[in-house]
Amino acid sequence: MKTGRFEDLTNAQAGLAAAAAVAVVAALVAVFFVAPSEATLGISQKIFYFHVGSAIHMMLLFALCGLCGLAYLGLGGRPGRATAIVDGLGVATAEVGVVLGAIVLVTGPLWARKAWGTWWTWEPRLTLSLMVFLLFLAYLALRAFAGSDRFGRGVASGLAVIGLPALYFIHFAVERWGGAHPQVVFKGGLQNPGMRVAFYASLAAMSLVSATLVSVRLRVEMLKGQLDALYLALDRRSAGG
Amino acid sequence: MERWSARGSGFKAAVVIGCVLAGLFLARTAPAQAPGDGRAAHAWDGGWKAGLSEEPARETVSGEATVVAAYAALWVLLLLYVVRLTMELKALRRDTDELRRRLDEPGGS
Image (cartoon, rainbow over all chains, first blue to last red; front, side, top):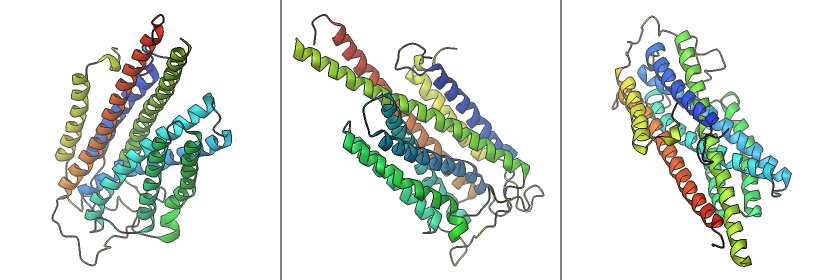
């Protein structure tokens, strides 16, 4: 349901944004006042909570973008509401994913310097994450240059589909090739209840933040489509009269 | 509740800046437990493979400064993106309003 002017946030989006703000504050309190400092790394380990939350959502959004690319190619890019939604969702998830990727690539080295003694190392998960980040940056650039061109959008969708297997390898990189990243979250780590609370609170907060940003970005994309339609209507009217 | 979109830019900027400052404040005032604290001991059992460099890390930057820098970067990046989205929405609203007005004019173009 819309709140008034069609450009405004819908009630659902406003509610989502409010929930995200509350969740972020709750997560920050959990991270800094509930979770204890880790014995070896000290306070710098607190970067972990939002760093991992951002990384997980970056991967989920890129995966969703890849699936949207598959759907777009499956629909053949034919004009229609389904194609517009799939295409818009692809752009929205890629863009928010790139923002989260930038957060991961900034907070990661800051933590790595304290934990590993180096800003960057070419270990499998880091390298693959950087590659996938650059891949979806290229997707956004290609998509921006393509405009409303069907072929260009198809090529961009193909690029997003290429990212899907890379996401699989990022997830299993530590198990298959080792590397510096620890297997903490799903392998019996985070045994302290306070740390678990902080981790899941930050994960929930990043879920709500990501959902809000994607929904607003999707709205922007839909409005761009409406603007194109209005320009066409105006052109037809000018030509006719 | 008044709509968020109906609020002024100054109010929105104040809310966002307040969130950033609150995050920074929380980061700086967080209680720092000493290593070996009963609560913290063995809490992290994820199998570290630390010590990638041959020598131990030079402690040129404190842990607190690192945390503040990381959280500041996080919120600044998100803030910049939200500002960009807001500006894009405003520009689209202006353009669509203008086009609709021109289309509604009788015989106008």
